[in-house]
Image (cartoon, rainbow over all chains, first blue to last red; front, side, top):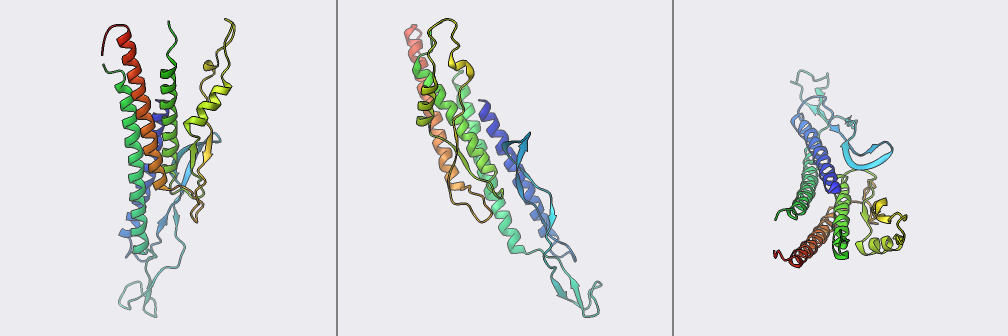
Length: 130
Length: 129
């Protein structure tokens, strides 16, 4: 029973981490047209407590993607320099959508694991009901 | 009191093994996108139970401490040996789903056996089911 409860906790951290990742994706997509915006990226890491691997997962520190910003030609733009260019964002929608799909897929997998652990503990308790 | 029949003990071990294996599956799925993470699995129940039987010591005198009181070993954790992706992560969600179906089957089987042994004992004391 204890390991089933542990399973539920681990699957929950998985879902939390994936939804956090999805939040950064939505921030990036929303700011696609913001001049000078750098996309936020985060990586996952395993939670280690007192030197022991717990199997839980968390998102690591948020970093800004340092790849080059898009140079957009628009002489009428208030931020445009003398050549008529200004710095856009470095968000690539295709990458963001792919990232969102991957987050969704992993989230669903975690949800399935959660559901099965719940069913297993339920059938365990069923033994007492008679 | 009487000792629990061996079949019920076996069923309990099997259910416990399935639950611990499910925990490994949960860890792997949670870390499906963690760079450098290696997928882990438990050894199968057969070899786990055999190893446990060898470690079992018989208590022949009143002063002997039964092995069961040391707690059951959790079973060895093994690497799944799947090919890692470019970021060093070796979790395959498909393999984990298959493994999860296996643990479900194992757990259901253990509970079914346990339940019917319970029915058997009820029948023996004349209560029926």
